Image 1: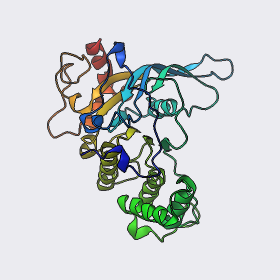
Image 2: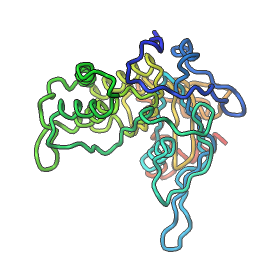
Image 3: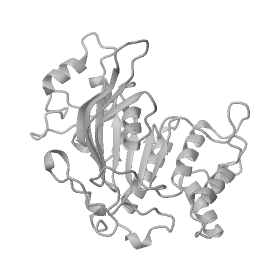
Length: 329
């Protein structure tokens, strides 16, 4: 069920009124039915990227190093896009490129469009949860979230509503029992590493951003906590038309089923892009589906485990990756 735009929280940022962009080869990519009803007044953030290439300047006179080569894709409002691949394949680099967070010495080429236009998101419209946890160790969970709410939410929102909203977000992330516990760190003990990860996501979710970037949101979490966090994010995305892009290393089978779209990378190249549910199905429209190329996912095996084993060339004497790519060409 879609909540009408008029019922969004007072602190929800207003997205760009630009129309939905054209997809690849001029084909219009429609948003999901869950959010189509509210697109006229609240189009959300439709993110597209085409032929994105990222290179790093070479050191000591060496040639530049290519990290990403010809990456294309899109993320629609109300859906969760998962970026997966082996370690070092460029997941975080692609996430940083889409979020405009590439550092100095890194060159970027290609088209990245927001609602069909080259523009920057308004302040507060997007949020980025980094893989590294950067929290003040001396604060308690309650204090960290309350202070963030005071700083991030508009002054027009009453203090009582800010506190109530902060407590609701804390409960949603399963941190109620640790509200008065110090965060801690390397020197002082505090909450666990998984709780710190959930607290980081909790702080970024305060403003209900229209575009949410997540870098390894399930790292440090057990399978139950990973499913709870990602299912909660997926529900909010569907309910409020939020666009979620997450770089995930190796999710569990239950978490994988929450993803609407999948971008599978291998060594800076796109192996598969499309609906996550179609990655293991046969389809004439795409030559990259695993079943069609002769690498079906066995029954009762986690799809993410199967994908990563198939496209990883670091350990096999005769890499499945080479055979897989040759079948796709």
